[in-house]
Image (cartoon, rainbow, N blue to C red; front, top):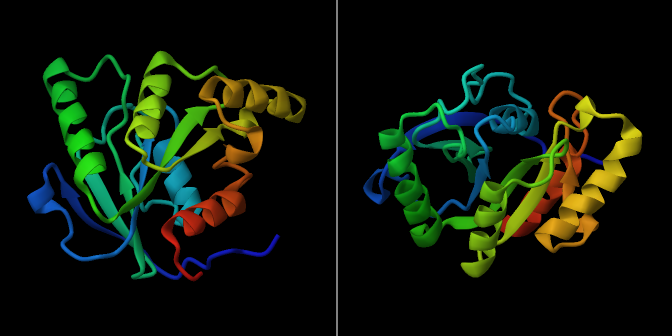
Length: 200
C-alpha cells in the first residue's frame, strides 16, 4: 500500500490548559485520547515517524496538559491527557475532565478524535463512556485497537470483531495497530486525512 502522506516535519508547538492558550490559527486538528497506559505516545511517534516527538514514560498519567504538535506545517495532532490511571492525584485528575471537555466541545479547528484502545482487553467502562460521549456530541472518532504485536495474529480478528460489537461499529471502521511493527499505520493515516479533508 502506498504511503498516503509523507511526514516532512513534525514539531511540538505548545501545551495548553484553557482556550486562551490554544494556537490561534485555522489549522485543522486531530486529537488523540486513550487510557494512560494504552501506548498513546508511542502511537503518535509511530504515526509521524519520529522516535521522540512525544515523550513516553514508564509512569502512566504524565501528560497533564493538552500538547499541540504541528505536522508538515499543515495540520496539528493534539495529545490529550490519559484517563483511568488511579495513582494520579485526585486533584489533578479532577481538572482533566473539564479541560478535555472544553477543548473537545469548543475547538472549531477539531476535525475528529483518534480513540486508542488496547486490543488485548475488552473496552473498559471509561472507554465506553468516552466513546458514547463522542457520539452524543457528534464528534467524529476513529477507534484504534493497539498493541496487536503482543498477541498471535490468529487472535486479531475475533478480538477486533468483539470490540467493534461493543462500540456498535463495523470492524472495518476500526484500525488494528502496533507501534512496534507499524501495523495499521498507513490505514490510520488515510482515515485521519479523510477526517481533515486535506490534500496529502
